[in-house]
Length: 539
Image (tube, rainbow, N blue to C red):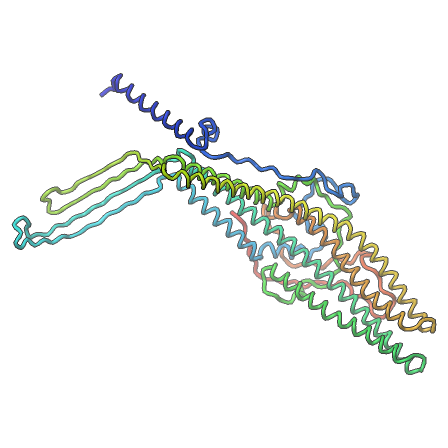
């Protein structure tokens, strides 16, 4: 039957009423009609990256060892030119347990997003049914009759809340930002892992050097004690010289066990980073000098931290997710409009009243919490306050990132100057010990000066070795603060095969001891250590 003009006018008026009601509803809430349209028919605020305080240049930008070009941080540890360190990094990337945990958090966030996306479709879909057999006995009731009835029912119910106000789309935005944050968390764990492996490796090499210094000094002091005992037996020295020489020797020998304890702790810590139980790492690590650094380092500009550091990106994604939750809370001010439907089938045998029956219904429905506006408005304020808190956390993260980068830069620069002066101090101490021994043999100085100079040599060498290690640690802290290394997940994993022999000690890398039979041990080679490995990467 064709639609008449009056009927058409009635239909048009109905749509106009619905449009006016929609405009009034939007205007009654926190989002105006124009903003509602600009937000792609979603209520609540649209996200924008918050501002963050960042310096235009580095404090030490004028230092000739600092370059302004953007650094390539994908495999920053290779600047040390140490194959053993390269293999350790590859093993840690594939086997570290904490990195695995972060990878599983990505999978959980991805699945949570998929669940959230499902809310765009009919939220309730239920298929139900039952059957029963009924036996009746009339007895004294003249209405009932003895008999048996079989009944059956099958039905399907559906309810679909339409996303008029963007509640479900805002939830998807929040879930998507949470997924991004979980990926950034993985990258942050990876950056921290790479820095910890490199720092621990440098600490091991520094302790090896300090132990070598202590053993060499113990050998020198043993010779001094032997000479003092010979002079005492010859009557040219007192037993005070002998006991003072023995005290120096025992003090140095007592230093070696403590250094070995620290070495073992560092090796055990490295094993945990590699995802293996603590084991003897000496066959794999061998003996090698403290890693040396390149003469310059590229830093780029501080503003690059905002896009490079995973922890900053993670904090920014948390702000985005919370902004979307403000929209979810705002949508509760408006009615929930749904489409519901139901289809039921009934069957009765024998069919005294009916054999089967179909019952169906469909139509719109709404639910509007009109008497709970105080609670709903306070929830919006709550979500907004949490968003502001996360904005402040984002800004704090940016400041801390800049602080860590500047701390690493100053440690890298000043440790080089410190090591240079300590190198000169060790050289002078070596010569002083040599001259004091010659003069002591000639009777020109007493043994007290010899003992003090030998003690000073032990201390100066330990401090000098630590200073050279601090140079490498400072550069590692710079790369960590710049957010370097997470890019390795974008390509093939670094090799973890048989480590090559450590690099030879470059000329001038360590101060020479005074001439004596016992010398510092040469750099050794590392034996291969194989084993199964596994990789976890985000999907």
